[in-house]
Length: 219
Image (tube, rainbow, N blue to C red):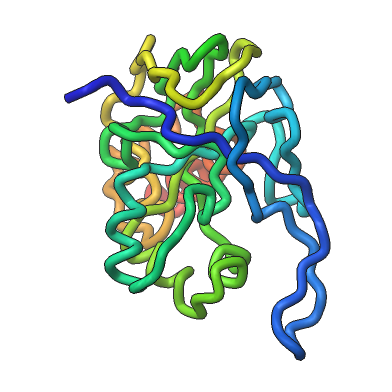
């Protein structure tokens, strides 16, 4: 397989959005537009990028949202429409990586930045509203094509065409796909839940969920 590569980079600031005559106003940073040239990735996020709802989005464990470029072909066929990169609110669209072959704790060097996978993206209502597809949230959840978040270990500039170099994989059992599936339907067995509890690289909010799940399983 060719080395994973940044296909495009998207950033966007929160702004007021309106949906139809009766949709009302809502504020969000879900609209991410493609940018050319180098973009700085800091410990709090990417230059030119921010979130409106800081309780549920953003923060030091979610500085970059990545999404698999291969998913776009599937979505275009299923939805019967074109979707630009960034349509799912991601900062980086990447070829060669998916939820299946990325694990929590993976450390990647991209351009001059070093990033670590922290959690699956838990999709919310803003994605279908941004794309005008009413049941898109349910489709994302069923498909597992969610995307995943990184924290920044070392700040630096990234740009389109940069390769993703895997430096470390401390938790090979904890793929993003399996962690998301366990979080969604609570189907994971005790061994998997225990592995998740032992994962120090997992974001605090996701780790707390697995701690509570372990308590429910173990009594």
